[in-house]
Image 1 (cartoon, helix red, strand yellow):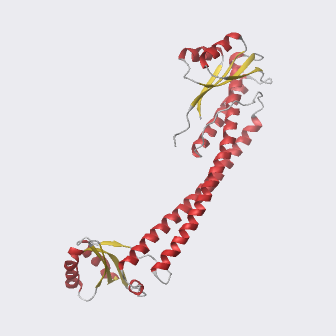
Image 2 (cartoon, rainbow, N blue to C red; image 1 turned 120 degrees about the horizontal axis):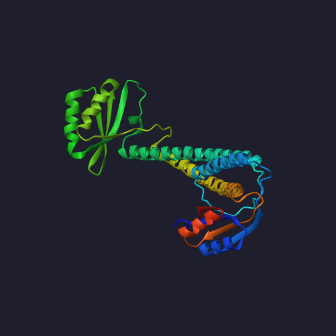
Image 3 (cartoon, one colour; image 1 turned 60 degrees about the vertical axis):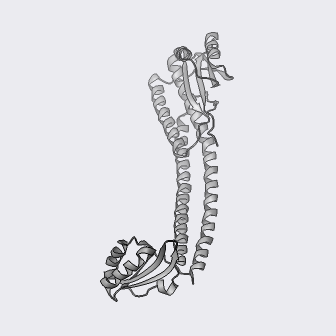
Length: 316
């Protein structure tokens, strides 16, 4: 599937005059929403507004970080914000961001845990299938003697005889080598050796291109039932994984709606504050929102920036 087409969104806060609207109309060539607003700070000092701008800018960066963490798509919209009593909502927004992060981490953690179990289950199925194909009886692969180690693997057909002779001459009757089924150009072999000789025996076999693999732990009465048990377990785990992925998708959808709305409010509030500082208290202004059909010419951006406050960002 192709990625959603990115559009450029323009937000502008401009003096409410014909010149501003004309410049904006010539530059966007797109449907534009507009709303008149009186720039009023509620008797805030310049210092207080600068402090508010810094705090809101920090919150904007935190929201963008959450969007990256949760892999959320930016969907810019115009917001109804026309007030500046945003202090109380800053803490609420941060609490919501923390809650979204925690929920996402919890579900993601469960997915990673299930995925590890799935990987382990698949490895066990492969291992049990390999052991079953070797052709040895289960009692040959099981050992209650703590001082012996069993080594299972494949040895090339053309090197089997030489390897057996070397093992016999080097270890005498201390080490036994049993030959199992043939698989293409190799034989399965099972080596039983005292623990103090096992490493030496393995190193000797490796000289003959021996390919060892681990004998998995299993509790079933035979290999076939062990494989079936693991396959049944795998089906359950895959179902759990699918359910968790659906849960994660639903969480991201809800989070995307919440986070995008908050970001729109923060950006628009920042523009109102910057507009008061630039255009002055009590100025009759217009707020514009447009999804651009093409890139704005540099001259238009410069003209709009001189007259007021603008913000450009990508959105799906």
